[in-house]
Amino acid sequence: MNKYKMYGHLEIIKDLYEKATIDLTLSEKVDFINELREYIHINSPFHNEPVDFVRWIANTDVTANDYNPNKVAPPEMELLEVSIMNDGYTQPIVTWPNEDKVEVVDGFHRSRVGKESAIVKERVKGFLPTVIIRKEQSDKNDRIASTIRHNRARGKHQVDAMSEIILELKNRNWKNSRIARELGMDEEEILRLCQVTGLQDIFSDDDFSQSWIASDSISDSFEELTEDIPEGEVEEFRTVNTSDPDRIFHHFEKWECQKAGFYAQKVEGKKADELEQDYADYLSNLDRFREGLEGVTSEWKNSCEHYLTNKAMNRIAWLGQASMCYSTGVPSKYCGGFNRLTPEEQENANLLALEYLNKWFVTNGRPEIDLEEALSIGRQVNIY
Image: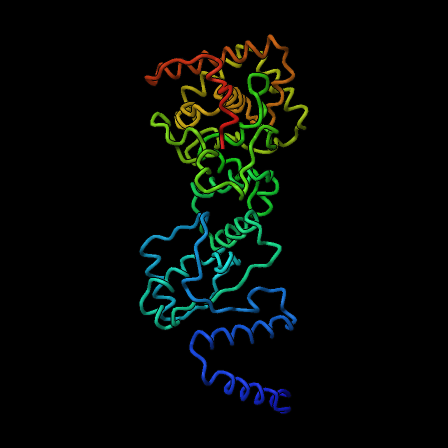
């Protein structure tokens, strides 16, 4: 026999519950149940696990977040509704407290069904099952990371929206290594996703008239996007080129540079110092550099369209890095070799890249540009 039944504890609790709730309205009864569960949760050996305390909250008090990259098509939404109608709520909605309401961290579509499906809404009496995320995860950066982890665990995330989230996390001073760790990605995937909206964040930190290095840090002049910025001013921090009618986008899976190893993190059998020297040797040999530029601009159609039509990035830098990768297989990570060139060699490399950039423009019916515009000088500080 269960020892709690033997001692009569459960009978006492049942009796107290019946007497305490006999005259309560539905809302009051739900509040009472939540308080009782919370007391049990606080004293539970599993109180560190959010699922140990499922709280029922009025659906009007459950609000969406503004960053979830997971979108469900109508057929899948209908399937989710059927699942909840037939199986009931088997998973609570993950939330965090936001003033007098709660905001969804994971389970937005489950919450939609509970609000929009008349059958489900009636059955759960206008309430939704929720759990509160751990307090240490309540910062917006951590909530974003948590949402993505939940989505990725189910194999669902949307590339375009994911890239925007990664740019926001970088603008909040998260380094690639931390983003990769928190979101369960590798750093190469972070780099690829940044490219969905152009090279703005990767190439936003250096003056490429002096260097072709793609740094991972935020420059001192880069204005941080914080939660204190009014909603109406957020757009001032967004990318300056995504609405450009002349801009051509391609999904990263179509980029020839990506397939060639442009974003690889290492080269087997070689050290970073050797690879940077290889980079310098390549750029200082203008005949080799010219051959690489010819190959990139004639064979890497999708990559060139995606990158060279982006007015907010350093297109000279990209051509240098792309031609190096095309000719030698050395990824862009080691472009610090550019700094090993003499000022004269750097200028010669820049001018040769500009020559092929303008050849590509003319071939594709676009006007030629000068070196300053190709280097995007002055634009970098405006890029989000």
